[in-house]
Length: 197
Image 1 (cartoon, rainbow, N blue to C red):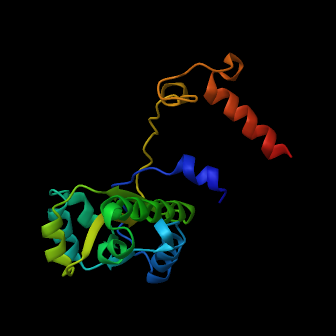
Image 2: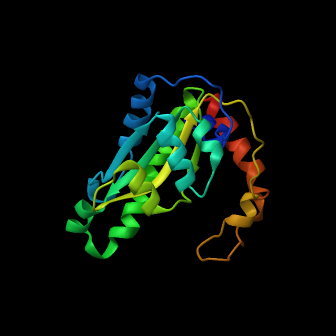
C-alpha cells in the first residue's frame, strides 16, 4: 500500500471481529515499529504483546475502564527503557521517551492498516495499574497501548483545514503567496501531477 494512502485512510478503530491476529502478523507490526527513528538511535522502545483475556481486561481497567479494549484480539503495550535513555540524555529522558515511542507507534499503526487491520492508540491510563498488571520492572515506563484487530467499523475522518494549522516563517503568520490557497486543493492538484509522472 502506498504510504500517503495509508496515512490518509487510517482511522482509530474500537470495534473488532472476533478473529485472531496471527503472531507472525503481530511480529511484522513490531518490526515496522522498530524501524522508527529514535533519539541518538537508542531504540528505547520495548513491546509487550497481550492476547490473554484476563490480562486484556486488567489493561482495559488500567486504561480508565475503557472496556472496549478487552474485545480487541491483541493489545501491544509500548514501553520505554528510561534508564537506558537517562544514561545518554538525563535532562531530556521523559521527552525523548515519549517522542521515540510515539514514532514507533505510528509506524506500527500504519503497517497494521496496510495489512487491513484496525488499531487504536490509547495513552490514558494509570501507570501503576498497568505496571502491576504486566509485571513491568523499575526503570521501564509504559507509554501507550495499541489495540489491534480486524475492524468492523469505518469511521469518517474529521480534519481541520490546512489553512487553520499552517503558518509561514513564524507562529500565527498565515500570510504567503495567495495563489496557494485553498491549501488542501492545491496539495491535491500537486499530488495528482506527481502520480502521473
